[in-house]
Image (cartoon, rainbow, N blue to C red; front, side, top):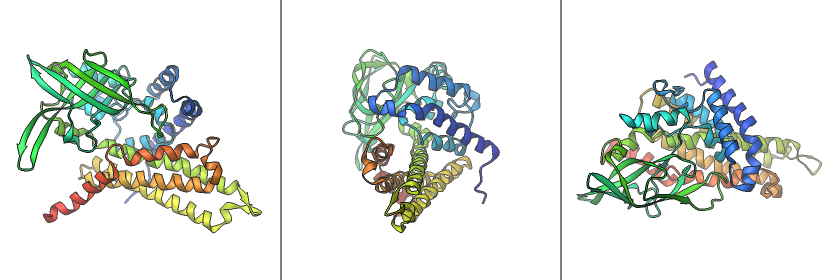
Amino acid sequence: MHFGLTDEQEMIVSTVRSFVEKEIYPHEDAVERSGEVPKEVADEIKRKTIEIGFYACNFPEEVGGAGLSHLDFALVERELGRGSMALNHFFGRPQNILMACEGEQRDRYLLPAVRGERMDALAMTEPGAGSDVRGMKCSAVRDGGDWVVNGTKHFISGADHADFIIVFIATGEDQTPKGPKKRITAFLVDRGTPGFTIRDGYKSVSHRGYKNMVLEFDDCRLPDAQVLGEVDGGFEVMNTWLYATRITVATMSVGRARRVFDYALNYAAEREQFGQQIAKFQGVSFQIADMITEIDAADLLTLNAAWRLDQGLPANREIASAKVYASEMLARVTDTAMQIYGGMGLMSDYPIERFWRDARVERIWDGTSEIQRHIISRELFRPLGA
């Protein structure tokens, strides 16, 4: 088995890492302090991403994307993970689910998103329905040929600057032996649609400047033209296109962990206590050894999951394993880095406390660690009839 990268993949890694270091790093402290990304900075990042040909690189060439493979795109996301989420968001990776657009939807949503003319966001989570997607209460009912939507979504990343939102809404209910089962439909909802409000969400300790928003629907009318995929076919759309979000969390966790590791490694080599570098103490050097071992393991798990997708092989379990391991690895690595820095690690003079805070959300969004373990165990037991 060959584990090396091709020349083209090495170029991808080098280009994106250089971009992050030059265009993202310089703005991180200001965004951390203010909790805002200035529009001119966001526009400049987007413009430069388009210039180097990486905007919407997760989309196929036939719609204007770069046509990267799952493995190539995992490398992009890994390098982006080194930088601020609030800033690298404008590097531009529209939701793959937009490939489900048909007819006029392609001209209104898909193609402008790929070109960077319109930005999207994805909305599933509700105050009473996070991991339990079928528990959502935001609903749409038929009325005079339209759909009338009422309800609330929250924790919606990117909605503060999105031109339209891909929203999953309950459109009916079936009675099953295990109780009621919601039917779900995906809708494309434009900012400014009457009855649709986007407002500020909660203040998070993780990823300052990368805001979460609340969406409110009050008798919001949507025509059939706004349905993405089939009516009541929301789960099919999810299963077809949303698997990649878990790989994204895993790859970005690896990238962020490598940046934290570099800080810890250099600090341990420079910091002196008791007349020598702390790297010479076994208590520190063994921690460094454990950190890099875990990072490499998470990296290989993640790249393997992406490679399996490219080969058309089953990858659900592998993706879940990568997501749970990489996100939990990041928590351990950032915590260990803080221990190596000692008291200074808690100070905002150093970036370690920021990475420590940011790491916490990775075990929650895009499927909690518990959900990933459920997916893994289900995949293992199902063939045995258990």
